[in-house]
Length: 305
Image 1 (cartoon, rainbow, N blue to C red):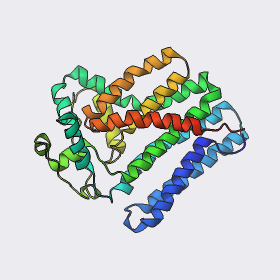
Image 2 (cartoon, rainbow, N blue to C red):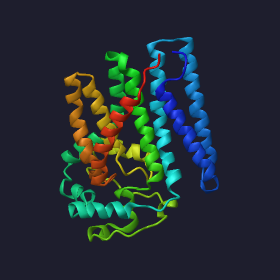
Image 3 (tube, rainbow, N blue to C red):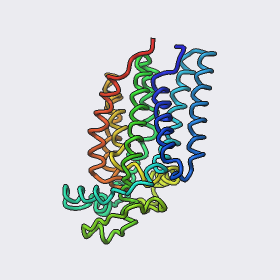
C-alpha cells in the first residue's frame, strides 16, 4: 500500500478539526503552543513510520504504524481538558440524573459497602486491564486474523477520536472531581450545586477508594498521576472502548478468546463507578455508545486497494 491507512487518516482528521477549533478559541487556551506542537509531532511520527514501511514493506513495519497511533492516544486524552475547562461544568446535571434514576449515588455508596481487599483488587484489576486490552486485541488480529487487522485498528482508533470529540464539548469531570469540589456531605444529602467554571483552575481529585495496599490499586494510582484530568466522564470511554474490543473479539469467531476477555469487561463496567471515575449512567451510556461506534465504523471502513 502506497498511501496512509484509514486509521492514520482518522488521527489526521482529528488533529486538523481540533486545530481549526483552536484557531477560534486561541486566546482562551492556556497552552496553545504545546497543543500545536503535539499535532506537528503526531503528523511527523505518522509520516516517519509510513516512510519506514515504504522502505521495508512488511507486516512488522505495519504493526509499528498501528502501535504508534495507539501510543499517541495517551497524549491526546489529557488535551480534552484544555478544551473543555473553558466551558461551564455539567456534573450537577449528571449527578442529578443519577440520583433520579437510582435514588442514590452508586459512586458514593458502592465502594463503602464493598470495600474488602478482594473486591477492591478485582475491580481495580478490571479497570487497569483496559490498557493492555487495547494492545491484546489488535495483536490477536495481527497474528491470527491479519486480513482484518487494518479494519480492526481503524475501528478502535476512530472510536477513540470520536470519544475525544464528545469530551471536548461535554464538560463532565466525574465523581472523583465533582464530589471533592462540592463536598461528599452535600452529595450524600442529594444536593448537587452548579459549580460553573470551577475546573478551569482546579484539577484536584478524591483519592480512589479501595484497598490502598493492593498491587492494582497502586498501578491505578500511577495511571491517574500520569494522565488523569477532570474531563471525559460521559460517556465512559473505558466501557465504550472495552465493548468495542469485545465485539471485535467476537468477530474473530474464536470463542475461547472472546470469553477470556468477558470477565475483564464485566469488572471494568462496575469498576468505573466503584473507583469514582464515572457515574453509573456514564458506564451504561458507554455500553450503547461503544456498540454504535463499533457497527458504524465497521460499516464505514473501506479496504485500501
